[in-house]
Image (cartoon, rainbow, N blue to C red; front, side, top):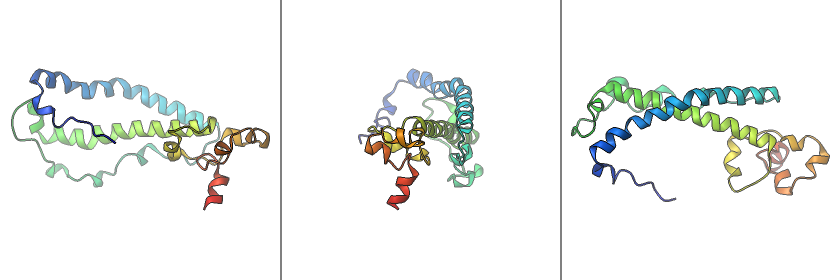
Length: 173
């Protein structure tokens, strides 16, 4: 996979672009997080109403506090140059970003994706090029596997996929 090029370009960016760009890190989260939280609640409620059990918790997606490399007192700060803003010289700025903002927001979006994968595996057990990535939300059987007549309508790769067919998974073990 080709890498994203950013580190080589950043030092050449005009200060105005950087000053405009930095707040754009936070604005999408501030505006989207309330909606993602509502989405998580609704999707999880839907799954529970369908009878789902053993759904992982949001906190399963948040890295343990102790797994962070730097403790509060050891948190490194950016001390060279004064190119774009002085906040980077404060420990609390990096603690907020590296221990709260990043892991909690990434966990929220990962958790939402996990729940949607479960919904997709339940209602739409039809294979496509990206379906292997849905294995994180593997289920015992899909909606289409509940009755033998509908199950037989599925393409063999859909019918026998271990992501949404626990019987097939146990045969492979």
